[in-house]
Image 1 (cartoon, rainbow, N blue to C red):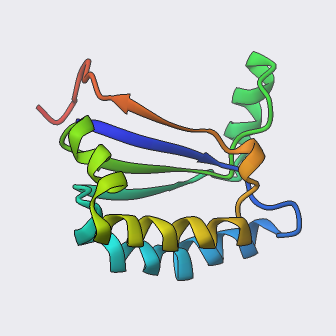
Image 2 (image 1 turned 60 degrees about the vertical axis):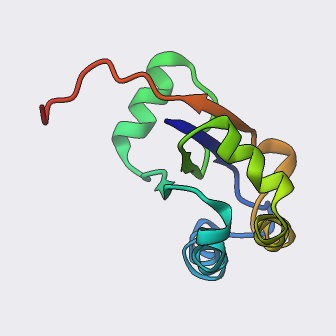
Length: 125
């Protein structure tokens, strides 16, 4: 499984609540509308918790501030990802998402990259 990971920092003009509302609302709607064209298997929004445990984890490692959230887009292969650059309908869906991103994402501080999943253990099995 290939995953496109997008580690999001909210636009500095937005509160956390405004950022999450836009991400869960209008932006998620764009993702749903373009899902078939994108050819992704799954779209996951991981919203960072505001919890004392996060503070403890960061301070125990002298870690930087966390991202506001992480996107996971699951694809069957890198070829499936590449299709988002070559297929006309996929490009249209990607353009709609990219056009919306500056409204709520600090793009300069939000890395995006591909990963390959390697499961080490799963307690469900």
